[in-house]
Amino acid sequence: MLSSTPTRHGLAAIDFQVLEIMAPVGRAIDVTAFAAADKHLIVRVIRDRKRTRVWGDSVRLEQVFAILLGNAIKFTPAGGAILINLAVSLNAVEVTVTDTGIGIAKDALDRLFKPSAQAEEAADAKCDRRGPGLAIARDIVRMDGGSLTAWCG
Image (cartoon, rainbow, N blue to C red; front, side, top):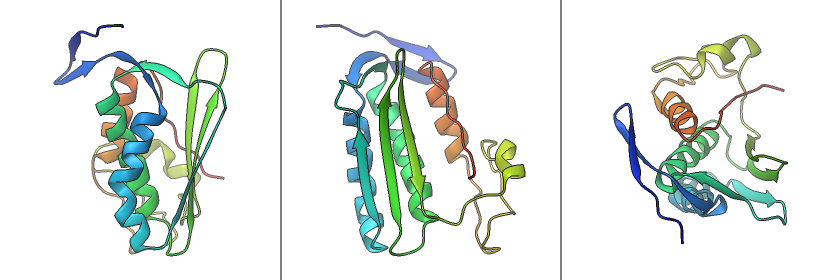
């Protein structure tokens, strides 16, 4: 069995280990299940049949996926759907979270990951995307050696 050594990166301790990526994804789904059920959202996972092992911090990755799912739940209207797709490429596991929510304007993507950023261009003017969630998620993913991006389409 591999042992991991907690390291410090900024203020966050990262405990790297080999893990199955579906474990933190599944826990994040469990954490956000009541909010999704309250809005009658369908949350579906599609994954490669291949093993989706990564080197990372399971607890921190769960936090990332909970942030992503929380945003998807917040901005998806009742009865909508959220799709989590896990795909394996040659050197990486790619996790994509897609929803049927209100979306974001293309010119707002560069501000989306800034702490306390507000995406005023959201289709619903009452929609406030303030908060450090996505900035924290991106920092965690970068500490784990990955990347976090958003797109509109």
